[in-house]
Image (cartoon, rainbow, N blue to C red; front, side, top):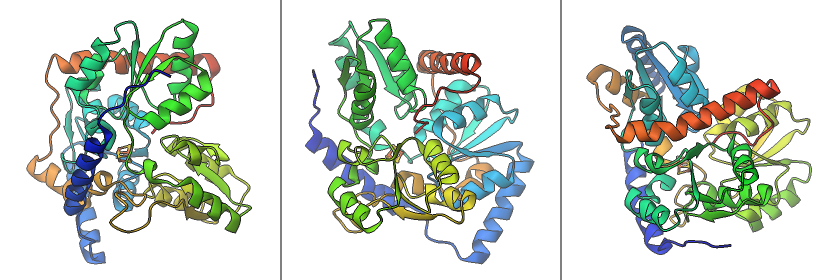
Length: 366
Ligand code: SF4
């Protein structure tokens, strides 16, 4: 396979610095009284400002609950985008990472999009700088450019297609059927998984998610020996050695569905542990076990929890609504250019839905 490797040591070193900075910005734990009072204030502000909270499954459980209790949504990135676009609210508060806020703004430029902390980013986004990516695309003009949702607006502006993991298989299969060769960016693990499944000609960017990249195949084998009846649930941003042991490979939504509908009692979960909050709510009788990483030490950048997702807190929601902090802007012409690849994906998935009366079983969104 033709593959471009970035200077990954440098990227990795930069990533380590960035994660240390992100962990330093994670809000301190709240007392029960503080939680209650901030939650109440956030509810009042959401109502007063005509705002709706759009939260990802990886953020703090309090924010997930707040979204559920106030008519917002807790979901994967694809549903966050759709929900924000279709909701009548004039203000969207996006609890997640920056590319999610940008996608909301690209789809709804007339809405105000606020985030609890604008510094909440993503190693996939950081690892795919627009200038280097443009040069990469320029060097391969014969290829269709497919980018994962976890990229900046500027990178999406260069893409022909945006995908989430819920539609990546279908879209790449379609492109393969048309005889198109693909540039895939930025997650190398997800790209390899899609390539294995579709056989498409994919030239990969060398990015990774710092959470999923740290799950360990060997340690997972040992854990399975201790829990022989457990189902192994794996997000496809994980390394191949981990994906190979999965009973279910899927997105956040697909993994939650697997826990809710599964007959097993125990589940080993290889994705960000923020998802366990929703899994426990929906399947309180199931036993959930975190998949092994490098451990809770300096050798582990994420320890199965994304520091940028963890930067979202109740105080941030209150501050952005009360003081107008954290507003997302995406300037033209980048916004309009980025809109094309997102709209292409949304139209494709809508057509699939209409045709099949429900999505073709896919692997779910990131
Ligand atoms: S969990 Fe991984 S893919 Fe998701 S925002 Fe964090 S670094 Fe990015």
